[in-house]
Length: 194
Image (cartoon, rainbow, N blue to C red; front, side, top):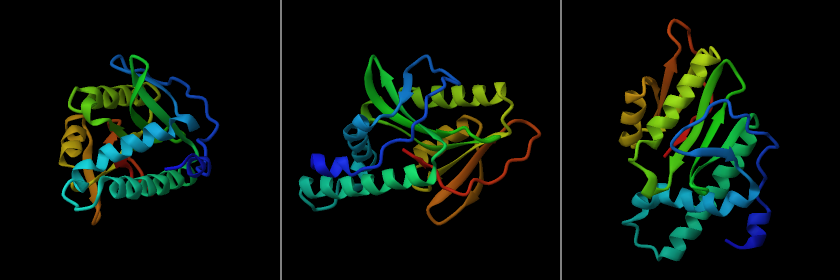
């Protein structure tokens, strides 16, 4: 991906990460335009297994995945303007992303994912627990997310964190966690958890 193509990408909304919750195992900061190369690399890691057996040269796979990332990025910026687009860091180095919409009485996890070497270390559980604890403190009615039907690893993580399956489509499962006794409205846009 050339620098000029990156320059055509929309920037993240001008939001100030408010530190409404913290995670002891990593730090969070607002995503910046300069993070796009890392986010492209992260996106490729999400889909590496899916593309492993496709008989394309690696350069073609990377070009295709870069296009897919660009489309996803444009969609997220347009569809979720009130979202906190966050970079997760460990010892100052980016390790993942968390896109979280906290502007309503029900929070929406749009996307969460780590580089492959940071998966299966308990970070996902720690982040979900922190988000859930912040929701309890702020008396949020619930948290909703959507997970790819083929991502059984993530589904198990969400179930272990108290999320329940409430609806399925051809491609995704809608899951929610509720503050006890409060109804939860459906979120209209799917989350993308990796």
